[in-house]
Length: 512
Image (cartoon, rainbow, N blue to C red):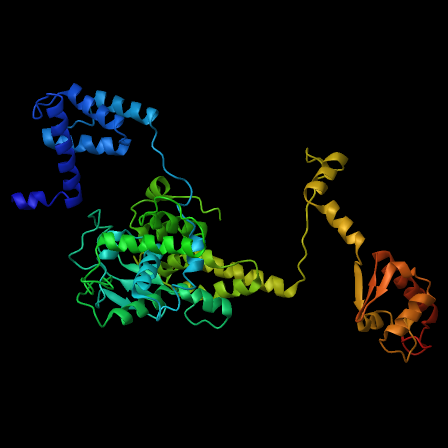
């Protein structure tokens, strides 16, 4: 019975409590206070000593919890303790960094080159770093959960488009509840069948590929069912501890900075992959359900309060894919097609929670796919132009023109500079063949698109030779007015020479 009741407290919590009790006993001994006799002033003095030594508000609350177990009293609800904590919160407010601890784009960029690639030739230690990082960043799970992963079925199932890890029955998560127990870890594929150079580059971030190669290269010396094993040394083939996996993740990040000749930020922790990965997933429009299910958070408020950072920038598998999309350049249509192909199967993936078979509204991935399809279709049918909108007045009144406001907007948007640059060059240009096709009526009937023929034409219609140039393959006009000049002559000649047919009502080609 006693053993069962002891199991109610996690070993990590027990270690924290024992450490707090030892610190309290030492403080009582140095201040000549009986340790087993509860005194509220003594408790507050002990907490003040901890605050003076640099402990944060969360650590002080942990000490109160430990001492509540020791004295079998609810200490945190006492008014004096509440007032003390309020004072600590005002004097030393808790701080959490709101920006990324490290640059995910930089790390993903380096993971695609040496020394991390090619994976089958890289050192086993470097391979372990990369696999540990990719698994951590795409699953956004704790290191303790990664250390419990197994390489044996049914706890590991490798599909064509994803890898599914199932926790073994002996593993207990940080929070033992129905929601947190037996949660699968689904890792996505990323460009599994590359054909384009960009796809081949992105495929080097494919977690499914990395897992397969890692299992293949470690199979000869494995001595355990644990997925992560020690790659070298006296413990080669033995299961990697939580501290070892955390060190591998940190080394992957540090190595990326060193390859780029950048100074890595101080204090990089493996646990930061949860914050960075989740924030990038939200940046790429992952849903709250996807995020909470993948990270085993019972509420999105946990992410918002403790993990969210500014990124300045099967449905389960799409979450990890959205994180890896940080490495994709979205500036050209070819990249849009690649992402469209990568998320193609998401439309047929089942519901995130698989609670029932009722038809669900379109997922975010399906909406993203449809939006990309529509955008590519529009781009294929039209010739895109950039349009700048200028406000005529700040009061939003019709038929009102504020000259100063309009001029200010034109200057700030660079339009005046753009016009000046356009005017300083040859804005109208044609190849000789295009010029012949456009102004055939001005040329002799048997003429060819030769430079001499076009030169004689421009001289004949008296265009200023300083305002046009003839190159090897093109003719250039200084301003658009010269184009209009030629067009007016063209229309005059066309009007003069066209005659009405006596048989039909159509027009005939002019003859010379």
